[in-house]
Amino acid sequence: MVGDKLSKARTHGTRIVPPREFDVLLANLLQPTLDMAPPAPSPVGRSKKAESAREQHVSADERPPTPPPHSAPRPADVREWALENGISVAERGRLSTSLVERYLAAQEQASPNAQ
Image (cartoon, rainbow, N blue to C red; front, side):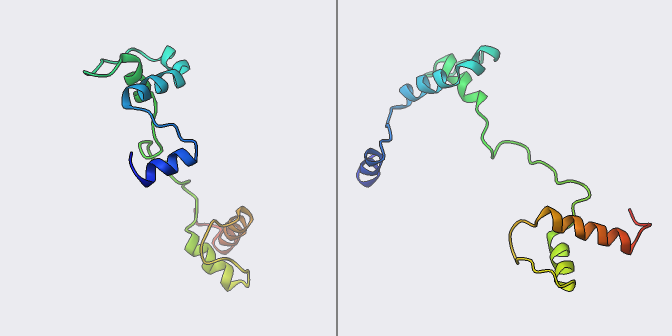
């Protein structure tokens, strides 16, 4: 790190460490999970402890996506229904649970045989 990034890191109190020291810090941070994990094969240049700690950490990008509930209506459909029924609703953003429940109840009343 050089120049502006280094000065900003120092301003914010960010600790800058070389990769080997990072591996040791990471291994110590994740120690409770390492005790439960089987030992991993060690690639050249890294300790077994640090490599195992890296394998235990799973980022949000690597997790499988959670499927939406089967009965969840499309937000566009809920918004359209709300506007048709004089209910104010934002063009974007999360819909309130009560609004979705009202929409589902109205759909159930409109077609009681549909599932």
